[in-house]
Image (cartoon, rainbow, N blue to C red):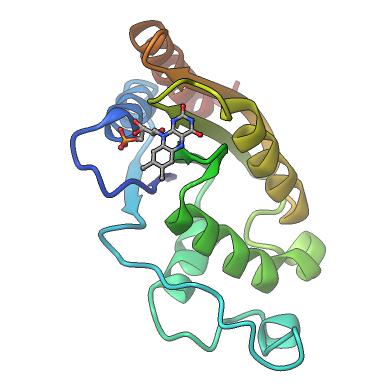
Length: 181
Ligand SMILES: Cc1cc2nc3c(=O)[nH]c(=O)nc-3n(C[C@H](O)[C@H](O)[C@H](O)COP(=O)(O)O)c2cc1C
């Protein structure tokens, strides 16, 4: 099972097209895939409880009772992931940041027990405006991947200028992920 995580409120935009391409690729590579839409699930931000660390540090779960623990269970069983975000201000979207911030707190200190440990992650930054900030967004997600013990695999920047070509690249990356390449 592979997981494609998207984080745009726009149901018919560039991020959505990237998500669909990733799913097509994984399916084409004979992989099973589940789509997580962080906006539809309305993931919540970190409360920064305690003195900077809450129960996330030792119990590896979050006090906020939303979908995060369900995601941890799904990711633990998954073989690899895509993280696909629109680029806002040269960064991942707020919903992607909520996910990354909270799950990093729960998983980063677990080292080889992290649900991400050794798993390939393809990161995609969808910059539909000028294209500026694609690289800083990818850099942020790459650093996060390493914090949680995942193995950043493809780093893909897509803009409105290279859209068609890069959708093909995303599909191919999905097939490679499922084929174990
Ligand atoms: C708050 C905000 C900030 C944005 N910042 C950038 C940016 O830094 N660079 C860029 O190329 N596009 C930027 N955009 C445009 C989005 O990347 C573009 O709308 C993209 O297509 C979003 O994905 P979507 O099609 O799934 O909505 C921004 C859009 C919003 C709403």
